[in-house]
Length: 392
Image (cartoon, rainbow, N blue to C red; front, side, top):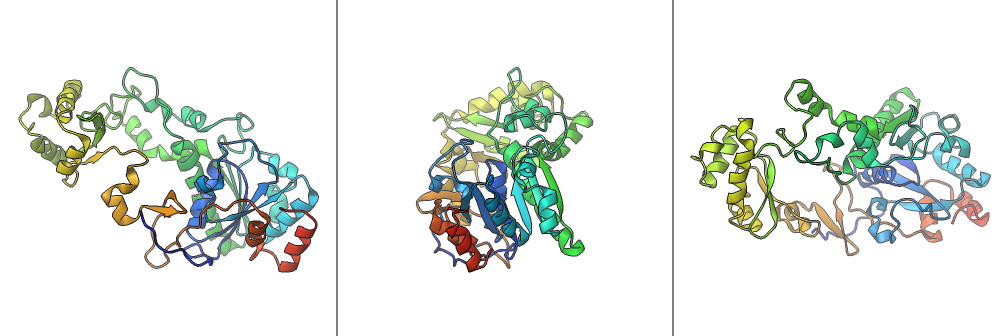
């Protein structure tokens, strides 16, 4: 892991100069804020005075999605706290919030009120179901959002129930990344028009959008509703994970015929009759057994050393502790160490305006709150709000 020296306090990266107010929430909103802060945006997090009881509470240093920004704690039911938040919003390019529809309006911080104060504001709203529709006010989580879009149905092995993945598809791909993408598009547009707008980033919409190519394959008759029988869902023997001699796994994915032929050659299976017709689905179940038997002959790392740098589309399946030490990821600095905790490095990478080394998540404190407000409000306003007890 990279251990480069800490960066200077000034923000660096392609988004330097962009200012974002994050109304504290859980899941996709904080990660979207982190993505933007990683690339240089100045993000201030407006948190609750008391914990919400939502999500998975943990010590600050392990809440990795809170890196690169500091927080103020306020009670948004206090009119003074709302006014102070409005002062922040008045100088912001964008706002992030992830409450159920109507909550921000009831707090006096809805889009109409905020845009009246700052007409150029891009108001980002991230929810599972979206701002309207029959389910807009219903509780849900990633698993539910990927269920109704068809994504979950396609995940799993033949003859088995759908396999719930980690919450990366709904919350973070369909939510965080689509919100960040929408905010940046809105900011670009506002710089030309002088007018802000609301970005409704619904995870169901984001997941459906990510499924575009998959749905095209289904429409073409190339991907059936019968999970575990298709090209990319463990139906094909050449797009699978195989157990090795040590009980660990190797991933294999040579879809292209030239890569497939090379794999068979390196496995000394190029003449096996069941493996000759790569796209003959009738042979897939038996072909998978042939490959499974061969991969059980050596350990995961033996296969990785022998085949991992050849054009056979093979890689070891690594766990969370192993991944940062993989030679390729180590060479690129894909993971970094911040105060003894492993973080993914900021991405993507920029040649001329690289992102600064991230700052670890900051503990909630009055000192950090004052530091957060500097650059957003004049010193006299910060002192006035502090003396009033509006933030802690």
